[in-house]
Length: 281
Image (cartoon, rainbow, N blue to C red; front, top):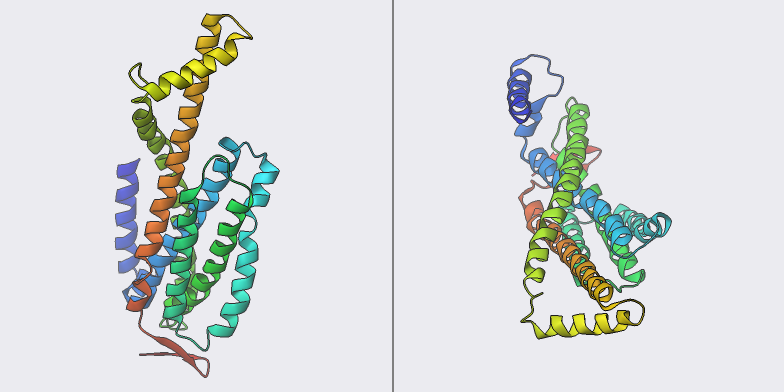
């Protein structure tokens, strides 16, 4: 299937570039602003959909939130987005869109890196506030980035260009969801192997914890059952910590992607609307 997909993609590109009336006009990618904007909106989709997939999983699987409470904890992102749209609407005609986009990616990197400091005893506000900041950053990215990407596209190509632009955001979102879920599983296995290496008869901390749990459980069952239950409780704690560390690593990678995109808007050609017509500088 991978080979079939690769061959089909190559055939699609060749056909669309050679035909006189292509379904998707790929020639628009020759414009620097649009090509760069397409790449950044795909990256934005990776971060946006990746974090949207990560947080409910974290809240429900590790913190024990029910589905409703998990959704309410993530929903404040919309509050930040509404606020940023109001602010950006007033600034987009006064400030260079490139600097607005840089500000957005910088704030998004901070809000995405924020969850690296979480633990299994955090409050709901520790999740809600980063979401508000994240939503605020997205308004500073979507509006200026769309203006910069399509500002040099002719009126005849604008319909095709916006279609490709939105498609790349969705493709980035698909890649983001698939990527973060794979990273979670593999990262948890790596951290589990690292943590289990300390669960040996020669580790005094492990032996003390095992002794305390066994002593506490021995009052309710026989010594053999108490020892088995103590081992099970320690294993559950190891698995929870391994999964938490995997979440933290994944959030860190998404923040790094935002940081990489921070300077990318400087490579856009400046676009300034004059009497309804985009001018190129």
